[in-house]
Amino acid sequence: MGAATSQTDNTKETLGLAGLIGRSPAMEEVVRVTRQVASSSATVLLTGETGTGKELIARAVHELGPRAGGPYIRVNCGALSESLLESELFGHVKGAFTSANENRTGRFEAAHGGTIFLDEINSVSYTLQVKLLRVLQEQEFERVGDNRTIRVDCRVVAATNRDLLDEIDAGRFRDDLYFRLNVVPIVIPPLRERAGDIPLLVEFFVRKYAQSNNVSVSTISEEALAALQRYAWPGNVRELQNYIERAIVFSRDGHLSLDLFPPHVRGGAPVRFSRTGARNPETLCRELVSQGMIAAGEATTNLYERIVSQVERELIQQVLKACQGIQTKAALRLGINRNTLHKKIEEYGLEAQDA
Ligand SMILES: Nc1ncnc2c1ncn2[C@@H]1O[C@H](COP(=O)(O)OP(=O)(O)O)[C@@H](O)[C@H]1O
Ligand SMILES: [Mg+2]
Image (cartoon, rainbow, N blue to C red):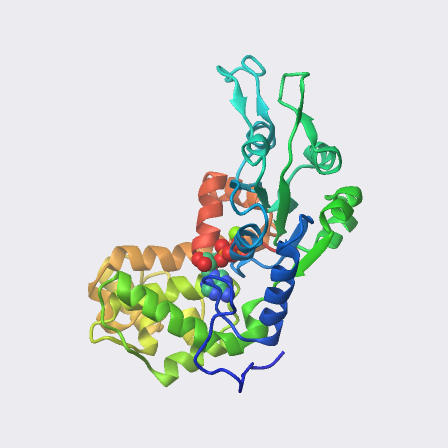
């Protein structure tokens, strides 16, 4: 897919869905299907790398559909352990397990009459997948620890950042659940496959963050824009959005120049420290400047935070790779909480990937 241009309408960059920017043929197709499917009650399966806009699409499906007046409930299935997720989704009764001090309504019940968005469905355990299949098929379930059957009427939108067919092959995902979810598949292409959308997104985020930061930024250098278009964006639109916001915060004269973007975006090498260099902040700082990791001017502001985040990103990326992208394993090895790791992966726009 090459750079997308449209001769017909140069002033309008939105795709007719609130807040969704892009004009590449691939995104136009995504929007076309989204609009079409929204009016039905069909289950939608969104597939796309992290940060590609799955959540935006899920919300649009809800808001453009007949259930727009009902609740929209999002559950991040990747952020909770199996037992917590089970009671989050289905609720529990008092005494169902040690910490169940009260009856609790689950998210499926909360979504009655509306839409439930099951984000990161690929991380649901095999056993919990059975229970999900039943809700999808029969619209019924029991709260944890209860035998009373509850019926719900809600539309299901699910999202995955991995190809579920690969997950089925690997024995991690049930094919019956996949077929049930995959009524209307929408695949959102990674940003690197629609580089033509980058200038529009940059313009949009520049305007957005200039406004919210009270900065009157009006320009981005050609050199910077070219680098942004060359970069592979493993964290997709979310990563782009983060870097633009950061560049705006650090810009002094209302101009976004290349040096305001992180080294890996500028085309620099990963962080490396010499054995002798990293003894005190000044030496470390000089070393980072000499490696092009931070600009000389930057070295005086937020030094600690900037160096730590550079190193942190690199560290997480390497450990994830060593753990074949398995977040629980990586969290253990890093000695940090899984949710913390998850947040950092999102923040840095990293992809927890397969071997
Ligand atoms: N096409 C787009 N236009 C504008 N903003 C976008 C677009 N795609 C993604 N974003 C923004 O990028 C961030 C990540 O999108 P999100 O929907 O959370 O991605 P995902 O759920 O696929 O990880 C959000 O802040 C979202 O608003
Ligand atoms: Mg998401």
